[in-house]
Length: 196
Image (tube, rainbow, N blue to C red):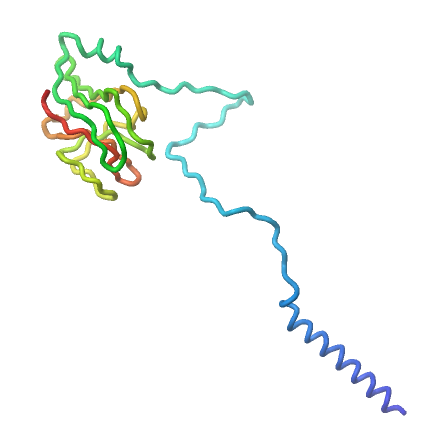
């Protein structure tokens, strides 16, 4: 009589232990962890310029955008007796669409200025205006611009604009104006400079 309850308890214990072990082994087939909605992965935004510091006021502020020189101002400035048109050239597309005219004026004795007249180019990150010794600009990316001289950041994607050229620069060594994408080293558009 004593043996039967012990056998029953042993069989019952073995069955409980076996059931628990079997559930543990096959439970991943039936039980899944649910993760809350995280959204689609996105690329982080990398600004091409340093952001402005936050203002102390909670009211929205409006900052003035510097405007390129207008055609009337350029004509008044450059058609004086002291100005001389030294070189000029039409923009042609290289890696992206671009058009307009690049004109280099000498004002007074030593002051040089580059005018982009009726200029237009496609948008891109960190575009600069360069002078280079190359006569023909190839559609390449990742290569350095030969003897490139940076005149500064492009002031606008379209419209007339001007850039000062240092008087110490020997203009005879430069044959082209290039709109250059600095981070990717890509020429967007170029204009060969020739005497008018």
